[in-house]
Length: 333
Ligand SMILES: NC(=O)c1ccc[n+]([C@@H]2O[C@H](COP(=O)([O-])OP(=O)(O)OC[C@H]3O[C@@H](n4cnc5c(N)ncnc54)[C@H](O)[C@@H]3O)[C@@H](O)[C@H]2O)c1
Image (cartoon, rainbow, N blue to C red; front, top):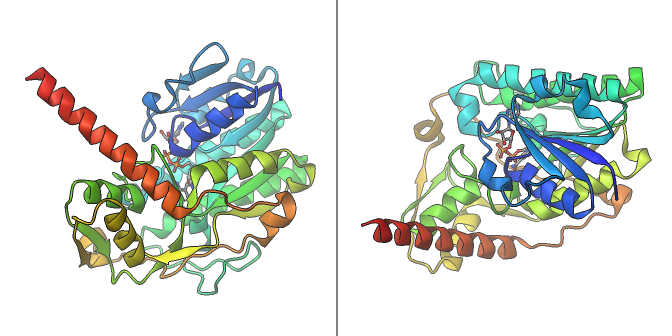
């Protein structure tokens, strides 16, 4: 493949994997990232004369018409992400997510580029029916419970994108990502797998929120980014919404047990109430599982990397990181 693509949020967890994939396919890349949760280190190996990183807000960078010269595709991933960040500053998250998306859509329309919007399973809110299908009604809690704000911003992003498609013919596909895991994901903002892996490798107690019977379906980031690029390659996917994820779900208790076992079995586990972890108004959907029929019909998608494979890799990487950090402390002393 030749041509140019833009990835907003390109120095983030998923953006960095997407960048590696698109670059390997022969595309020239511009990554735009304000480095709020992303990091230059995530993409340091990719940066050269065919892949540049612009350190800026996406809305600011995409306003430069020169940026779009020869660009055929934009993957819009820039967003304030993570339950903890949403609770800490919901207003900043709402402004950030909606403003970035609206600017990216408008700039892509002017440039005639195709767009993929990274939406989220959070759009479903606490919809009680499983598995979750793209055409279902969305169910949110009250606006006094800030955690729903994130899903609402993603739903607004989707409305903006669909309107751009209907009114202006923008070639835009909406990818509702479910729990995505893999190397370079960080645990500071409430992401469960990196948080558990960090504790298990350190032999420390893992905090499981609630009673641990809640379920989630995890999918490896390399499967997710493959699906993203394949959706963008098919004309009949534009103007549509797709769930992206795995249909294999686990309870969070099972997840913790599996990570402890794969890490050698020395860590412990305890239950911590949601109230203690996130404050009094916090609600979490008990179960979340995608129906991926639409995705499979569109691109023949099946995840290729199992949960155990990803967890084993993450534990290995964490061990390497800890050993490296210990060696550098030892070396400097
Ligand atoms: N990881 C998941 O399980 C998951 C699930 C559903 C949806 N998503 C979506 O996928 C996308 C990528 O998420 P991620 O998990 O890689 O998180 P991430 O935090 O690693 O990536 C987001 C990136 O966007 C950047 N960013 C934030 N605001 C920006 C702005 N105004 N301008 C430029 N850059 C900005 C951050 O610095 C970061 O690099 C997000 O849109 C997120 O909502 C992720």
